[in-house]
Length: 336
Image (cartoon, rainbow, N blue to C red):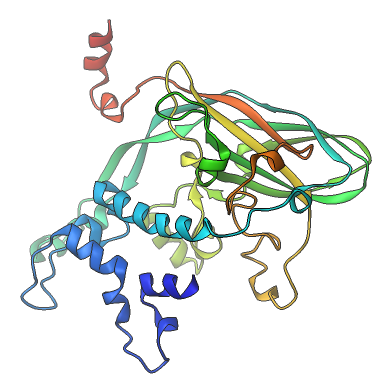
């Protein structure tokens, strides 16, 4: 699997250390981006005409990007289909039972985000002689209201426990309930945290602002310049560059409520393995990301006392489509 991953990326680990340093230009992903992007062949190396797929920052606007990455993900899932499912004993936590899980109201909405786009504007030599005009772009972006996940559990032991929170679909597009044995790969890990359990009743509240794998939107370039003048680097660039934007934590809801389900899983905490201390800032524990949905599942083993499925509804308020915010007076009259 590691070899296939190196092939897709065509990095130095695929060949010897004396191989061509530009091998990544011939990787599966890069070639696919060039073919699907359809950019004209440059007549020299300084006259490249890029498409949206040629930059990671603009790839999301091209529908072909999602098809390309879905194909890559499908290869990974096809490999995992051959991995042995976890057994009952692998998932069981002796002496721990989740009595109830409550999730506060989940609401998504669009709000305006202003970002400085001055550095993306081309200036002529004459314009550069004077102080250039600044450009600020206002864009509607999906966001959500803060919410809380409350877990009520009983423990017979005093132990450090890992809590994982997942979100997944409740129904298929055809209206039938989701079967986790067929759709285990559609559950997305929202949070991971360690909590010390005491014998008896334990009540844990986790705020969405505390979720581990998310961060606030990156600061604009003009703010970064101010930080650099002070000899500093923004936290999200130096410590958590690989986290998801916090505002994209929840999928977009509907006015009447879009049904999803949350899965809470508690298991004993075990730190990183000996010899992996160099990765302790990146590895949460000795379990893989997405555990226990990182391989095929047997549904009977996912109904244990230390697991809990909770049905939730995600609502959407105000403008349902982002372009409605551009001319709000027009769309408000149209709805009347």
